[in-house]
Every structure is written in C-alpha cells, then in structure tokens.
Length: 241
Image (cartoon, rainbow, N blue to C red; front, top):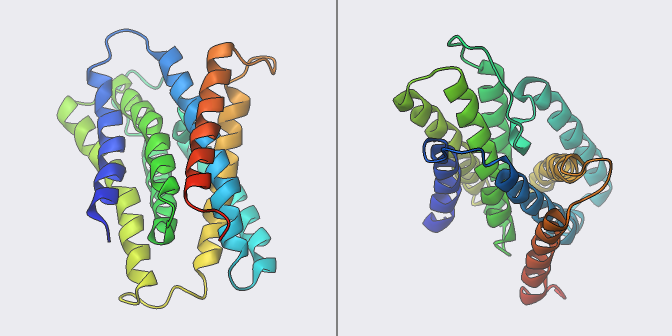
C-alpha cells in the first residue's frame, strides 16, 4: 500500500479543516470555486474511470443496482450531515452542542470513499477524493468553531474525519490482497455504491453552484479546469486498455 496516498488523503482533509484558523475574512467565493472545480473533477473521473472499470468486472448487470443504492445512501446521509460533504456551512447553536449526526455521517461517507482506492490504477481517484475533502473539512471545522468548541478539540475532530478515508483505503487494501478475506467477488459492488455517492455529490455541487441555472465565468473556468485535468489523466493513462 503506497504511503503517499495515505498522506495525501489525511493531510488534504486535515489542512483543509485547520485552515479555518487561518482564514480571517470571508472566503466563501474562493470555497465555491474550489467546490466547482472538485465537483467537475469528481464527475469526470466517475464517468471516465470508475463506471467503465466497475462494468468491466463480473456481473456487470448488478452494478446499476449498487449505483442506485449509493445514490440513495448519500441522500440518507445528508439528512444527518446537512450537506457538509459538499461544502455547506450552516449557522448552528450559539451554545456548545456537538453535531453527532454531521460527524458520524461524514466519517462514514469518507470511509466509503476510501474503499475503491485499493484498485485505483490511474491515481485519478486519490486526487478527486482529496480535493473533495478540503471544503468538506473546512465546513465541518467552521460548524465546530461556530458551536464554540476549543481549538484543540476542533483539531482532534478534524483529525478523526481526516483519518477515515485512509482507514477505508487500508481496509479495502487488506480485503483485496486477501489479508482480511477475498474482495474480488464484491469489490465492484462497493465500487458501484461509491459511484452512486460520487454522482450525487458532484451533480449537487454543480447544480447548487449556479444561481438561476446561470454560471459565472469564474465558475465555468473552474468547472472546465476540473474536467480538463481529468481528461488529461484519462488520455495519459492509456485509456485504450
């Protein structure tokens, strides 16, 4: 298991969340541009890499069912996370109330996203997930800060969130190489669930980032950059296999 993937996964989320202590002014416009870029990139790698890979395995007719399950699972998780995984920042109570629903659903979401990385030959997915976790961690940190948590506690909770995707990667890596049991029979089903989650998140980000279905020039450039970088990775990885 490549240690650099674990480090990128952890530090992208951890530094993204820790940035709440460095940002003095309102950076919501910058956050929206990062979201638009990551949403477009996630959507592109899902369509270019994940869906073809999932359907190339055994029982391809089952994959659609698991994609639907993943899509519905993400809708269910958002009832508790309040959309934090795609950068939503909500004003919460002025008193210290721990957002258990947000924290648990975000951690489960990140764990599931880390699972397909054991078979990420293109390395496109690792960057997509890492990018996507930066605004999610920032949104989580902002909620904790608004709820008047101590700085040390906020950092601990951000670290817990940051370690979930590497943990999912570690578990799936153990499954795929046989140390935890054979994963070959159901790995594509797990992939289908993650594809459903990614499709929901990426399309939600892209739809929500536009007002009255009109996208600003800066957001359009961010979206095109996200898709462009995914395409560069697609063609440079020898997609003709």
